[in-house]
Image (cartoon, rainbow, N blue to C red; front, top):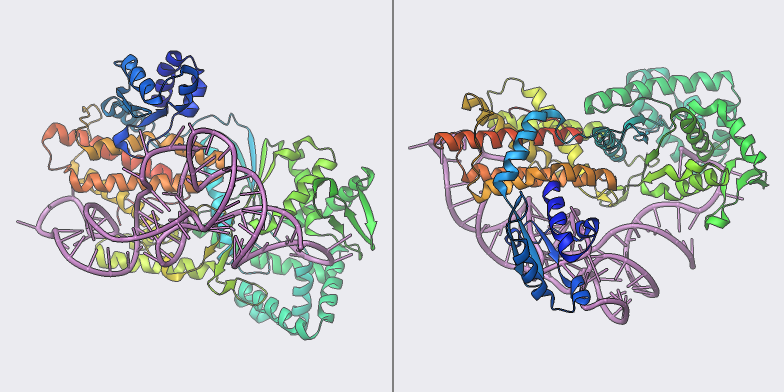
Length: 564
RNA sequence: GCGCCUGUAGCUCAGGGGACAGAGCAGUGGACUUCUAAUCCAUUAGUCGGGGGUUCGAAUCCUCCCAGGCGCACCA
């Protein structure tokens, strides 16, 4: 529809003596398709022309009659000038384009190979991969795919939480209460139990906290015993995480965790001190950020150990040196907003002009109805449990509805995983989510299975059709067909808007709308049963819709089964 | 206390300053000898948290207030 919008802008602009871009940005999508596909409110013209908006609209509509290739008609309706697209022309262009470009439809080279570093997922070693980590993982993965589709060169980094005081805690817990067998059998859950146990014990024995800090300091100082334990914890956890990523179909270019920057921390702190932006305070090293309206940021503890911020600072500098990114996105929970404001401010103080290319992409918390999830208190839900239940449910539904399906397990996985991912991607990421088993396991309505089901239905039609004639003529005659064609025309824009706002939910919503349009079409327009020329035309529409559904789902990291 | 985020139908949420505010779920009633009923159709439902303001026009922008959430130096 972009071409149509541009066309409208260029025919209207000269008539009212505006810049084309100005008209373009003023065009809007009417609340009802009855009022056309784009409309131009004439209120702003009223003052310049000293006429009533309605009259201006009427006059302009007269002057515009018969213009444009995509323009079917123009109407003045009250103060609005309504433009109607010619669905026939649009269909001919868009369907041909989709069927030509296939999996590449919607891709572009707009990003001209600029580098975008995306930091996402970043689970803590020593903590289970909970449902809370899902958001960063799927949103980051989707942004990676969307930006790559727009021609950016993406670098996905999993900034593992593999360093820090929690390892001191874990080492202490393991030394006190641990044994090798539990660690061997189910390392992540075992470490998690130790972690919870530590916090429970520490309530009565605060000296444990001190002991944990001591052990982390030993770790940073290269103590052999601490390092051996740390390495073992890290390796076992990482192996499990990788299994989860594999299952989810999420990839990273690098697993550079916090510990990766260890040998750069001293140099980083030296630089900070050299630039004279830090000061000693109560034995610790802090950077004052008053000029940014922020509280001071601590970079070194009084015992000499480093902090999260220190490692993030080193990481940011390393990444710029290494990749010369045009943007760096941190897909991290909104509760860390202050941390990133501080981090970016320190980069500014250090004189890095690229500091402004760093962006925090925040998202809301996943909460229990009763309150926040807390790893420390053992209140968390394992991602694997959620995914397993979703896949099981999908399998059960397949067994009922399509018992003969051959690759049932495979399809159940695509549907179950898709449902979980989509649940997280379809709403504005900034909002908190109340965790609800019933909702997350609901496969009807605005869900991934709904979209996948539409895709499978089309596949079924195409399978039975005996082939699609690419040269067939399109005949767009029903309201359902018109609506479907127009929605197909909006695909590219939905990707661009999703990228611009860093919101995969915009693309997710689009796909829901497309699937809805298709299902309406499906119910009201027979494809295989239609007379031959109409049948050919509708098969083309089906093939195009199928392609766009699959392409769009792929950008969200969700599969599109041929049958389900 | 200070800062940030959120507040739209019973529930979960869409809503790109503009035309009577829209979906999904739940409820009710319909549609499978016809391309997969994980679908479709119909129907009920709202002081867009509240008050001011900017604008020809505000759910959308500004401001104050209320409610919930999240942060605010040795955690990440």
